[in-house]
Length: 141
Image (cartoon, rainbow, N blue to C red; front, top):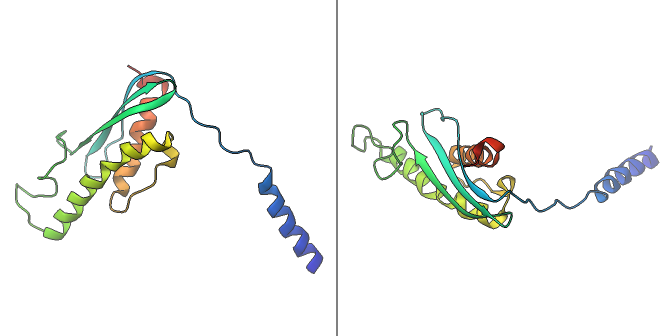
């Protein structure tokens, strides 16, 4: 029985050795725009990408609320007032850290390698969707 377990472990270890390292991602040059599906609150994210030499050289986003307005200092308020300071702070933190996603995409050049930032999980999903939409054949301008 011990031999069987040892052989099984060796097979599992060796099966991972033959994998190829991931190929660098290369994109078609151009300007691209894509958007995410609305989130559970009706907000969405729009990504604008510029690709040159097969690499993403610019990425900007519009982080829009359910009215199509860029999320800013009023995001998380109710009727223009902070009714729940804790929730307001969470909303504001999410808006702020979402701004880091484009920088990380420029560094990694692969949307699959952009890490989730704590406090902006919903925005991460929206960012992934928007970038994938932009880089799909339909997203080119």
